[in-house]
Amino acid sequence: SADSDPNASNLSQKEIDDLLSLRLCAFYETNISVANKLTCVLLKLSVVVNDELREWKFSSKGHDYKQSADSDPNASNLSQKEIDDLLSLRLCAFYETNISVANKLTCVLLKLSVVVNDELREWKFSSKGHDYKQSADSDPN
Image (cartoon, rainbow, N blue to C red; front, side, top):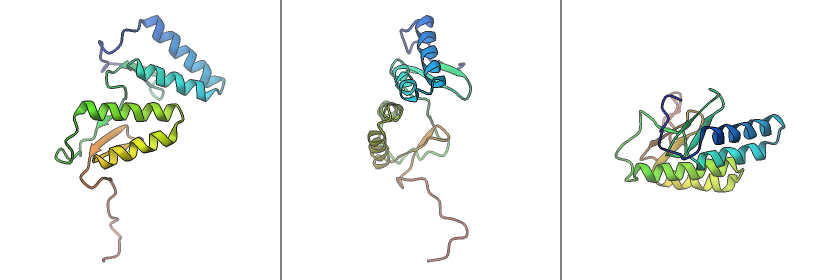
């Protein structure tokens, strides 16, 4: 991928190819548990896989989430590293099908004013602790 971090991993191209191949075979053999574990192994080795685009990249962040353009910069005092670490742990928990831990980490992030949108692969600071908006056709109080 064009936005790869070239210094994020010490893996050789062959090692990456071997892990990607094992992961892909696990998916095709419908061994999703193994495929997800390999995805987590790759994340821990700073390799982020995008199945939709059929590409991978190095990322020292350990995840592929980007900060949303409408993030409120005054909502939290967390450092980028702290956010990256929590997002990476959450993502690995999800891939390891440890949904309870993934959900707890989502709640930790929310309590720290960080809202995650998995569909958009984005996160943002929100002083509200959520990203819901009142419906335009809402009855008045």
